[in-house]
Length: 71
Image (cartoon, rainbow, N blue to C red; front, side, top):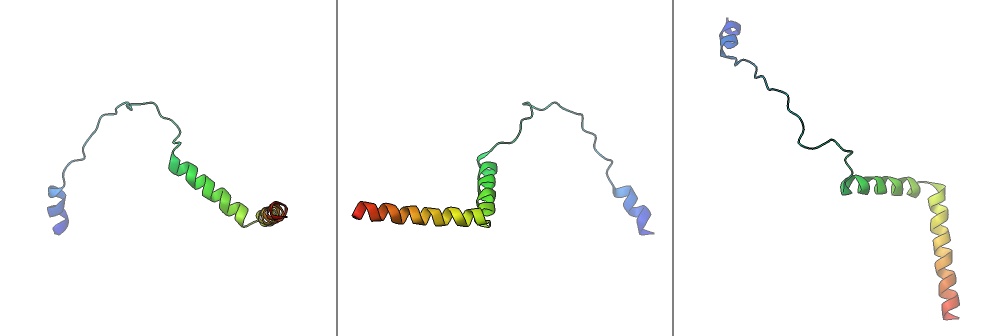
């Protein structure tokens, strides 16, 4: 009983004509996308053995520079 009542209240679907874009499509290269890639690379390096080895090498080089500068 309510179904036919609501079918009369529905508006017809709108038709929109197709338009050309204002500018050509390009790959979205933005600062946010670059920052996300940099963070993802940092996370991969941080979770790997190579990241641990680079961190250890940085500490050793820092101590060696400190040792030779103060000696």
